[in-house]
Image 1 (cartoon, rainbow, N blue to C red):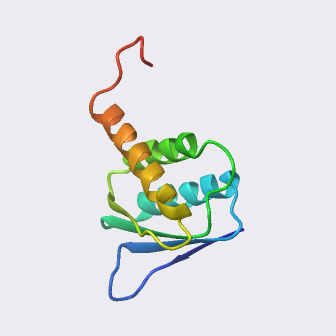
Image 2: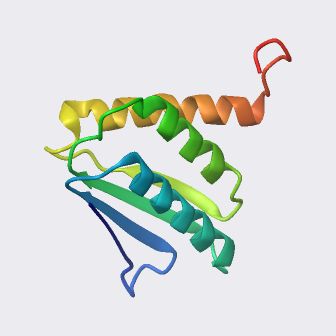
Length: 118
């Protein structure tokens, strides 16, 4: 399991995250923890570029990604989250699941659900 984080001197505030095989949902959540802490400690706006170079682990991807986006949406310094589709991104599954999760998290942040939907 591996997540690599790096920055380039010419682009302060841009964090690159690469996921390489194999990953687990526990490792994914640890990556989110790191990103949340990074955003909180950053003195400038943050852009995260996520480059998956492995397949999603087994399990409910939508639930895990939705929780990650909810947490990241609370960070005011996070300006952008860019997902780069690669040949390893489950033939589009990463972008599709990530887009749905991000949209749902955003909509819940902007328009919280009615009490019966919570």
